[in-house]
Length: 150
Image 1: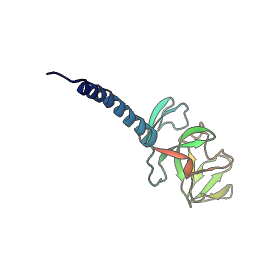
Image 2: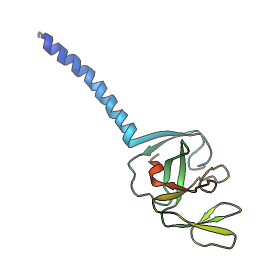
Image 3: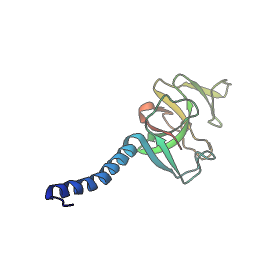
């Protein structure tokens, strides 16, 4: 079978197009759908071990208490668990900083999670830099970039 100059070019273009299209497809997946990250600290132990790789999904639905999210905080990406959703009243003890959603006693201060914001905590309170310690404890929904998938 003889190939003409034109059909050789077409075959060459097809051979080059397949890897380029696959590369573009995976680039788009990682740019717009998935987020691959690294957790260098023990702030989420035992759920996520120190020095673990994680995968998040950028297509967020409605976040619930208990969801683990990846978010921007002071030019860094952090991973924490949603402890308070918009409208929740969070009671913070002066001694421990642990949130209580249900009941307040005299040694606690209360804060209502504003609309469009979340109160986020690490699973390992002694190692976690989270909402308990931040000057502004509520993270805007716009700073949440992904929900943990794996």
